[in-house]
Amino acid sequence: MVVKALPIWVCANHSRIQLSVTDLGFRSSGSGANLRFDRDKFRKWELCGALAQRATTPVEDEKPLTPELASSGGNNQIQIAESMGFLKDLNSLPRPLSATDPASSPGNGSKVRVAYQGVPGAYSEAAALKAYPKCETVPCDQFEAAFKAVELWLVDKAVLPIENSVGGSIHRNYDLLLRHRLHIVGEVQLVVNHCLLALRGVRKEELKRVLSHPQALAQCEMTLNQLGVIKVNADDTAGAAQIVASDGLRDAAAVASARAAEIYGLDILAERIQDDCDNITRFLILAREPIIPGTDKPYKTSIVFTLEEGPGVLFKALAVFALRDINLSKIESRPQRKRPLRVVDDFNKGSAKYFDYLFYIDFEASMAEPRAQYALGHLQEFARFIRVLGCYPIDTIL
Image (tube, rainbow, N blue to C red; front, top):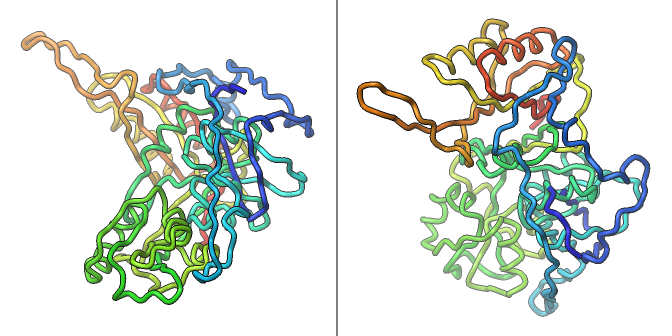
């Protein structure tokens, strides 16, 4: 079966899920059965009061990608012998959804299904469980697969990392926010505790290499240098732990979470091995529909826009928030992929070219507040394109 590429959310709370492309049939379940979207409706960004349903001009980057996806066959069977001390069967864990295999499994409808990137034991899964403690989590092999899972109604929400206090922004997810028509409905801040995991009975002195995500390896550079091991990149932290366990690597360890050690039957040789103890990752919660903003608690609003040409235009754009005493908590710029260069006429030296950017901004105000509505109305005087990505409560609990 061939399907169009759309974002996918996945959840994994250790429920046994067997997924295949032939299962990708959509059943009627309340209001979630109709997958036909009105594209024109979604080209509006909804604001409260005077700014409701104001049209925006789309940019080329925001058009969702629609590559045709074909199912990929073959399941890697993993057999773990009890003699190795690994008592868990990895086949019982949910298989990650992929962009080429967006299959779903039946659900009882009693739990929120949340997609995340990685395999069980990933920090993204921990963030999903922090946001929804009783949720069913479904793993995805890529960020875009999580987006597609939500758009295909395979899951209810997705939890994806957007920035880390040490490693900075996850640019891929900023780009995907614009390409897909999902809404930010919440955020999760998670304290990262990197652990050194190995097979049972293995000592630090026996280690010759350590596997993990490149960012996790960089965050533990001092500890790993003291061990004198070779650093090996893996797709994600929990995936590295899975490799060590499934392949029975006695000369290797993984940098991952304590939860990953529990899932894959590994020993924790050391905890909190990150160089910076204040290591926090911020995640976004995405859904098909926005939430209704309120004023009963602190809210944050995320937007993306592009600006007209001219001196001081960015200063003027940011001033619309300062004039109304609105704090900006995040500013990120990304080049427009379809139109990376802008040509400026120069009568003396011909034509000059410079990068054309998209600006992502988080500001601390609810769209239910008139000052936020007026600020965006003022911003439209300078912006060629504005899109509200979401208005959601601020996570204040670590």
